[in-house]
Length: 307
Image (cartoon, rainbow, N blue to C red; front, top):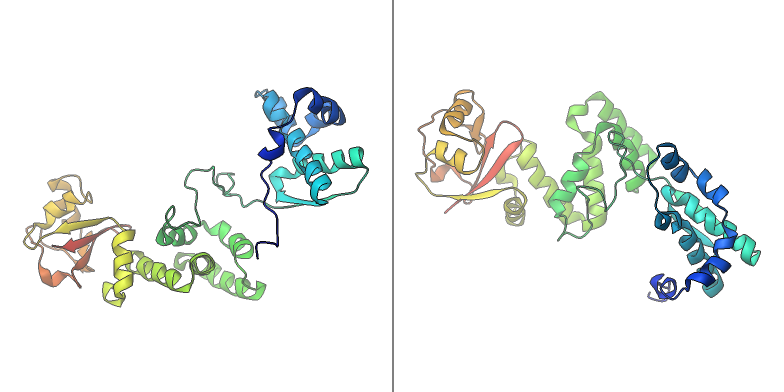
């Protein structure tokens, strides 16, 4: 219920602070010697990359927050991501000096993309949101399905509630044949179910299997067909349209010459049927319930809507 926790906004007290009082009551408890030893600061000083006074005072403000919450609510544990460790410890030391109390801190490791060294976070490019209006269920599912092989096990351990035994079992399958993406499939299915529920996760998986896994449109329910239209680029076509024109219209090819080359190279299919004739026209029989998949190669696919 709403009584289980108190939500506070630190602006409520930080905006009322007077500078001289802050320097006297808080600033004197923080030594610059200790602050420049912190990894986050010392790394920047080594590289001579500028660190502003504002950034430098961040840990004073965070330490003061902890003190305020300790005074006001008896709060004695602060948790956060591991990149916040030195700021949280600043608060632990500050409370110890100022109030002579012992308070506690713990952090959890950040999820870091091994390839780029960047953390998974809302400030990063391609951030993943829990809100389906910001990241559709299908995009959310795809995000986890596309996790790099070397991240798959860590994500299963940290992002799901699966047992170690289940994760070990899927990792054995994963190592045997990485192309099947066993670990990523389990990850995508499980995390999407946790966030969006089973039906939505099943729909995202079904749509994904149709787009990239070789499943047929006929396997989709009406609801899932709608999701397919929302998930992939969708184009309206009418019967009799020339296949080369449609390839250009959908941007699967950039010119008539390129479109014809793709067809000659057996790289184009309509609803999993290979297109062999560049002169061919779109026919109603190529569609299932008014939709068809036009594919170029394995990964480039659009949904055609017969109008």
